[in-house]
Length: 300
Ligand SMILES: Nc1ncnc2c1ncn2[C@@H]1O[C@H](COP(=O)(O)OP(=O)(O)O)[C@@H](O)[C@H]1O
Ligand SMILES: [Mg+2]
Image (cartoon, rainbow, N blue to C red):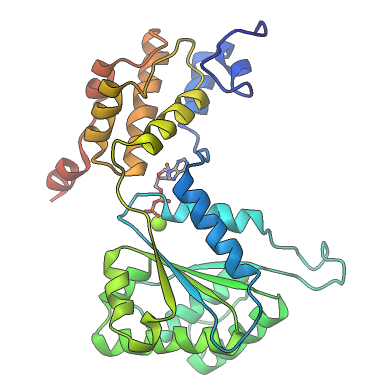
């Protein structure tokens, strides 16, 4: 039974979970959750701005740039959830709406595959042998019909797996799509994606880069650790934002957000399973953890 005032190190909504069975708590700890941080909020606000931008010939675009596993897709998914689709049955006028459409740039990119990805995102069936022009036509008509107001192209760096000819054609296509639909585009990718965009004189002026750099030991990082700690149902405080702990976690994660979260989650699971109920600096090291760069070395 949780008495009010217990577990002050936890977010009030998390306190009731500390008395759950071990397996239940472990599952809860491992479940993805949204942790807010200033840079993510700023990116969400920038996308919100784009969404309310009046239609005009040249719409502004955004490019979320950062290393792999650093929270880019989580941000655009958070944004998409904030602007949910309505099915035809749910919509007041009986017409389905899909305000934010997210697609992934396919590897080995060509126009047919990109339109295929868009049609998949729209939930429109198509045949593998449908002509590109036909797919393009349906995709554009459906995006208009469902009132798509913002198109997110994730994994934009996949562009670079194409020949330079394919790259140019796809960049032209993106430019054309934005103009034709008069909607803003949000590109998402690594620094290589930025390089690809920069190779196109006309696109470079229209994509405003928004950087999501690797994390450093600063106030924002300490706040992230505090938020994370408050979200994990351990019975004792761990003081993750103490300088030594914060430093170890950052080093183990090599500054990448997905790894920061993964390291802490693994240590929290250990804390529950071993009954210590608090994460120690030692546990961060002992969490059976291989650094991202070492893992890459192991993988090859
Ligand atoms: N805001 C966040 N809150 C909680 N966990 C996050 C957040 N952002 C990223 N993560 C964690 O990091 C992992 C990688 O994030 P992701 O958005 O897929 O990275 P990217 O798209 O930059 O490669 C996610 O699976 C999640 O576990
Ligand atoms: Mg991603």
